[in-house]
Every structure is written in C-alpha cells, then in structure tokens.
Length: 74
Length: 227
Image 1 (cartoon, helix red, strand yellow):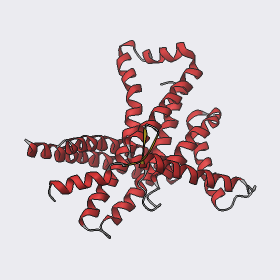
Image 2 (tube, rainbow over the protein chains, first blue to last red; image 1 turned 45 degrees about the horizontal axis):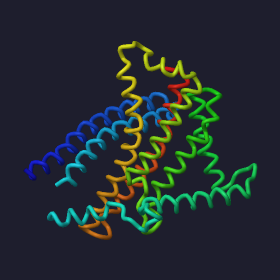
Image 3 (cartoon, helix red, strand yellow; image 1 turned 120 degrees about the vertical axis):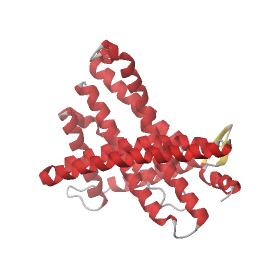
Image 4 (cartoon, rainbow over the protein chains, first blue to last red; image 1 turned 90 degrees about the vertical axis):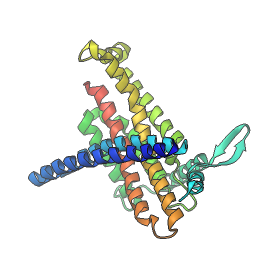
C-alpha cells in the first residue's frame, strides 16, 4: 500500500508540471511575438506575461501541495 | 535515501518552537517576521530623515517602486486609484523583504509557513470586499453576485471564496517548495549543489511578491469597474 502512495505523490507533480510547461510555453510564444511586432508595448506585455505565468505556476503548485500531504502521511 | 533520511528532512523544513509567551508557543516564523519588521522600520526611518527633491540611492529605488504601482493603479482604475497605493505598496515591500530573508544567516523566510500567507491573503481579501461594499453600497455588492445571470450565483460565490485560497497557496507553495528542494539537496551534497536552486528561489520570491500585489490591484479594479 505504501508503495502505491509514493507513486501517486510522484505522478501528481509530474502530470501537473507537464501541463503547466506546455501552457507557459504557448503563453511565452504569444508574448514574444507581441513584443517583436511592437517593441513600445513591451512593458505592458511583460507585466501581463509575468501575471499569466504565475497563474499557471499556481496550478502546478496546488498539486505539489497535495503531493507533500501524501508524502508526510506515510 | 531511506525512510529515516526523509524524516530527517521533515525536521529541517518544519518551524520549531523557540519560547512560550504565557500559554502561546512562539515559532521561529513569528520571530523571523519580527526581525524583518524591525529591519523595514529602520530602513524607512533612516530614509525619511534625509528626503531630498532630487532622489539618490535607496530613495531612488523606492520612488521607482511607488511610480510603478501608481502607473499600474491608474491604468486599471483611473485617477482615483492612487488612494489604494498604501495597501498595494505595503504588501509588495513587506512580502518582498520576507521572501528575500534567505540572505540573513540562520533564517528561513516566514512565507514558507502556511500561517503567514493565509494571514496575508485573508486580510487582503477582507479589505478588497470592504472596498467593494463601500464603492457600491451593500445592495449593489449583493447584486453583483447575480450580475451576468442569476443562474451563475453559485459560481460567483465560489470564485470569491477561492480567491484567498489561491492567493495564499500560490505564495506558500512557491516558497515552501524551494525550501524543501534546497533542504533535500543539502542532505545530498552540502556546499555547492543547492546554489543554482537558491538563485532560482530568489527570483521566484521577487516575482511572487509582484504577483500578489498585482492580483490585489486587479481584484480591486473588478469591483470598481464591474465585470
């Protein structure tokens, strides 16, 4: 039983990081195209990009918290 | 690494009780917060004694921060946004200094403890709701839950309740995850392995402070402008 809980804790973070990595890559691509097209707006775009990256990171970290909960219960 | 190494790691990352103030146990988190508060107070005190119209040095830096937040508030809310600068600026500077307290020896940042971040998030969200009630009146505030359609009432309430949870968990999980990874690397190879992770952690700490205050600005703006 305990072995399966370890696998669950590892799998939670892996899948969440996969999804968040893909999502943040797409967001950064959009931001870089925007800056390349119009360099004067780069301040606005940079702030929005940081905000969006933090949102996606937060989803990964929610699952990290679940994984920590699983780890300390063993 | 066996099971006892994991238990040893767990002792590294949990806050410890330092002394008792009457019946209340005082953890290292609280003492670290006091130390950072004293440092902030001293910095502010010594800067405000020699203010000059042409800023130099640290005053320049703080004016840059104040300008950045003033522009942000004006972009999102119009001219009247400037009066929310104390709330947003204090949140940013305080969380920034708390996240950067890696640099004081023997200290772990207090934001790695869930209590600190939940305190920040609950106080901020209560303030934002009170600003919303003051702006729209009590009737307007309750009506805004029914705003696009009354069928979305439950979703709007859940969204309001999730805001403090997501704010606190975002900040806590970033700092706690970084601390745990550094502690685990320390157990493996003491002096050199944690250094790149600690650099990443410092950057993430600065970004998380910025994101917390940015989100507060956005939440206040949705109350003032409506959906």
